[in-house]
Length: 213
Image (cartoon, rainbow, N blue to C red):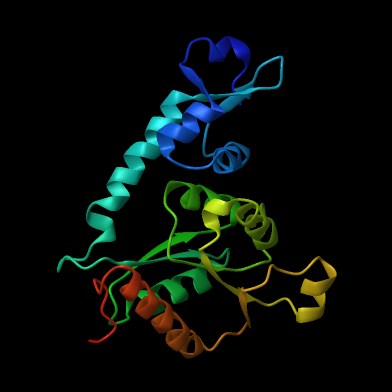
């Protein structure tokens, strides 16, 4: 975070103002500040002041994400998957697996929970596929951050991990509704699950996504 002398040289706004400009909840703005997506500092009274420049960056990135990257060449809305995995070999394997499908899919990747939160702060995907045991911010902490904000209530999450069920339980477990696959994952097992999610997204978006070839 910038010190107060630096802050005076920039335009800063309140958390509530940032929330209105970005059209997200106050909790989501706080999440983005905590994860470093938004630049901010605190006044002597403990109030956050957020860099207007960092807010504008998110607005511009949101416009870029809505335009060509969310729509296929045929004008279909792309089903958006965010893959968070620190193993580059597995990350590439999963990326090419998803990208080779017949479905109109967009795949973004991140190498740890921190990068995942930054990507989620820019645009909420239809599906988050994540590892748990990662350097830096792990998958547990990333998911807990997400579940603390109502803005991510509808986010579908699939976990792929080498950790066993007893360890996951011992460290506090995961919220309900998250599907867990233990590595090595037979990627073909994911296809019918994600195909069903795409079909549901098709209904929600008035048939703009088609699950047939």
